[in-house]
Image (cartoon, rainbow, N blue to C red; front, top):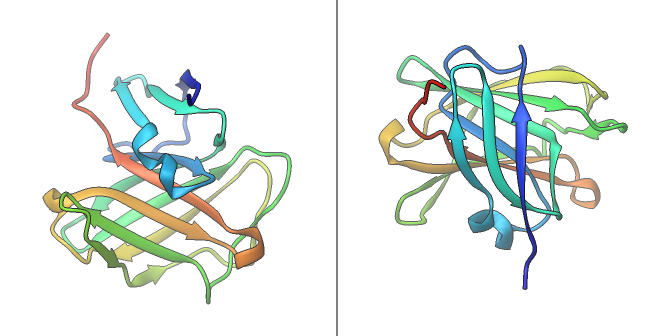
Amino acid sequence: MIRRLIILLLIVGCAPKISSFYGINVKSEKEIPIFIIKSYSDVRSITIEANLNMDDDLDAWASYDGSKFINIEVTNDTKMSVNINPLLDECYFVDHQGASYVASLYSRPDGYDINPHDVVKYSYYLPIAKEDISYIKLQLGAAYEKNTIVLKRLPKLKNY
């Protein structure tokens, strides 16, 4: 039986002002259904359900930029640099039926690492309509050191 862990994160100042998705690093795609966003409030606190194989020290927020782009900000709060590679990084948009669409890169950070406590920003063209997105899968780095961040849609904003 998979042991579940409820994590309460208080995000201060690292989220875009109007976010639509939040995500964490998952070790296996089998864990995507286990990652659940329970609630989100205007003070940027978020409650998620995850398991011990997921890493919220490498997380991301995504927001729409008009109708053509989505911006993804990745935060590395780990103690190690995270490898990124302009030739190997990939972003997929998965619709509600499970079909996956490769997103075209609009802009990416310079360099090949996200250093500890750094935030980097990617922008992608939307390959499908905003309302059709179930989740986003951002794969960073080389095959031997790949990190997969799964971003899920935030629930309706709750004021506490």
